[in-house]
Image: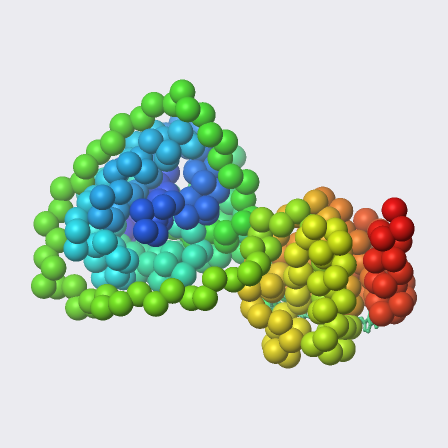
Length: 340
Ligand code: FAD
């Protein structure tokens, strides 16, 4: 169905850049603003409109915020039966929207919901999907979407195109792209989508939502991160990093090796399978600088690395490097802050 025949110029039937305006408990997820930033840039290049797909129960009030951040149109579907996300209902509704309106590009956040939903939509609409993208560009020559993501365990960055199926679909890694700026003077339209959802067909019923215990840390928003790696050698090493982080008004981050060792919770993990951060200051302590770790912190404003191996890869991305034992160096840094 979604194969487009270049010989018949069927590509031209598909127009517009869509983003999935994921909301939870009637609040937009932060990644939505990042998708809007990307979609706006693409739409301006392709000379088309940005459409935000907003679905849920009593969510219309979020529309203006989407418009203020770059949407030209909000495609709205409200139904009390979809107060909570279910894969079946969401994928049916969005697939129907795509079938009727034919967008050229659709972007979703690579959140838990986006990762679940996007493959189902891609399968229903018989198109391709590039998951977990870290860069998106429009090809200057043919206007196709170039979707870049880490591949082969993060050892290469692969750029993928979807030549003859539409829409071109991608999930985008949260925290990587810049958020769209707010412009309260923007105007746009809200289009209510008409669809008779057959509740009987939805086989999944949400009985209860049990919220995860609130994490004490939001490393994505921190301005200073003191991150620890296997070089700490023991769980208690994080207590030393916690002391330094507190002195600097920051939080503690971690490499996957320490998370896998059970020294600290996954909420602290930075990297390809953890969080992407861009603090003002990132202090990497006993972290070797594996490509999968670098992927999550390379955009930090200043990177300081402490490592006893002068050849450690982390020094290649560091602005300042200290070669030595972190258990000698960090107490000295804490003392010198105390003496300021
Ligand atoms: P190591 O590589 O063991 O490095 C420890 C460092 O500490 C060394 O450089 C050593 O010289 C130094 N050191 C030792 N003792 C001291 C001391 N006393 N003082 C100072 N320095 C000392 N990793 C992530 O971090 N995040 C991810 O999201 C992630 N995702 C991944 C996804 C995939 C698909 C794969 C395959 C891997 C992923 N990894 C990730 C793992 C990654 O490849 C590395 O294995 C990991 O980052 C290594 O962690 P580390 O630097 O703490 O440990």
